[in-house]
Image (cartoon, rainbow, N blue to C red; front, side):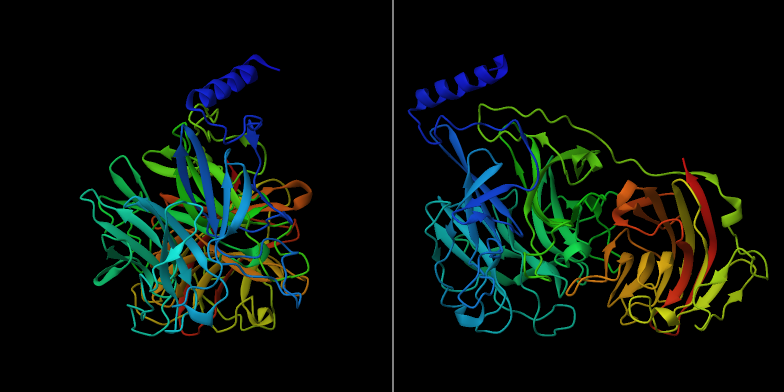
Length: 604
């Protein structure tokens, strides 16, 4: 036994004896490291899915017990009913002494709360708080007898329950505040207290955006008249607050949570001096505008963890902040025997504060190997070393043969059209390649998409950049859905990477898509991540790196001035040296996309 290990064990024993505490048992082997995902034990094998996790700590007699709560997914692939269907749950509950190994306790509820009725058999997105001398469990009823989703609340003297439901929603079903349409997504609650002691409840999703209301002193009701918008609709969900150095940080998840190996979730953040906002990112861009900002906290990094999001933040007993979140194992995205039903295990990784902004593992994002274990007890320490890996890829030497400024009135011979049968009409203005949107896109009718293409570099790692100006109105007007100017890495009509500027309802977004095929039955063929906010003119970059037998890693960047870039997430794909660089105008007809240039570089 090493000196450090012996000293640590002695400290545990003396601490326990001093407080007369035998829980947790002294034979616990405190882990020095952990590897994602968290180990969630049940009587019938490990739990495989813990979406939208929440966490709280209870200290008794000098020991800490940690409690974990999750959306009510099936525990594992064997968790089925008499008909062989996966069994939903009413909020999963686990406990741990070391923050790494967890034991399933029970569901938070033994039956659906009466006010919810039989409209749902599953409850979602728990948020657990302690105030007024008791514990509060806020949760989502995705369907209710009132019609639509709502947020409920239950209380208990213990974080393990039993929980007593309040008997009514704390936020009832409501209409979308943007268009008054019924069926707003009243989901994903979080509760925050301001410096004056007023508590608020935030909630919302793509349909209706993120709202916040005053919470009553007893925590059981909210005031609809106080409702305000924090983030635009059609972009963010999963609001979670964190206070740090005088600021309130609002972390929100974007894109798709649950599309198996193509899940595109990421977590973005803005900060404000009060819970009411306005929340802006490190570049000063609001979360509540039609081209929303949001500084990246975590995104896909190209390892086997995709779609990281649905997060909360907690601090371990050494003072190190952590993100607790779910992600999708790209090697095992679905419950066994149930293709199409995404499982989202729980992960943790440390947060670094870089220039006042939170970023997971200093910008390395989700870990796939051994990491220093968090400090789960007050006598423990944490060996994690803070880092700043928020580096940007920079262009090196330009590859002249693959670059074109489009300053000629004739098309360079380096170019050809991928689909000769498509409507490949274009205009060379003397300063841009100009093309009209036509209707089809590569995910629905690829053979009719006009893609101007050239070969990718034959060897090495590289970057491609373009500058695109769209005629789609740059405001919150609606609806020109998916009329886009796109930069492609295109292998064939089933396999590509795409970075585009696109209107989606009343928002303007930069979409980073992956198309793959053929795929097994019930697997997706296309989905996307999002990058930085666009403008009327937006600069786009795709960085390609080799990734051995797994193919390549493609990372997205966007900019509104060509100088200051936002780095997005990374897709892993196998496109190889036969792929082509392409530019295209797609989907809803009637708009013009002007490509000022295409430049291809070696990486600096």
